Image (tube, rainbow, N blue to C red; front, side, top):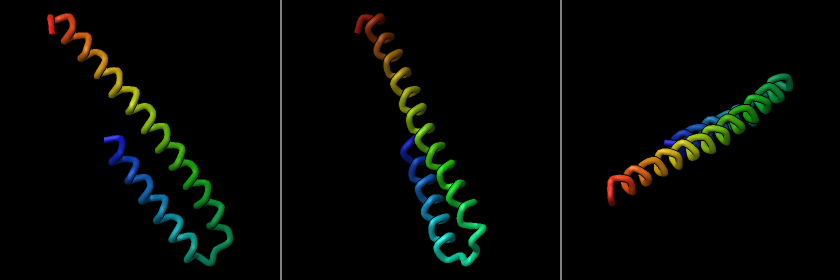
Length: 70
C-alpha cells in the first residue's frame, strides 16, 4: 500500500513538473513548486508511518504466535 501511494505521489509530482515546464506563467511556477514540495513531504510521511504501522502489526502477530505456543 505504501509503495502504491508513493508511486501515485511520484506520478503527481512528475505531472506538475511537466505542467510547469510547459507553462509560460512566471507566477504559476513558484506555486507549483511549493505544491510539489508539500506532496513530497506528504509522501515521505506516509511511507514512514505506514511502515511503522506494518512493523507494529507484524510484531504483535509474532508475539501472538509465540504466546500461542508456536
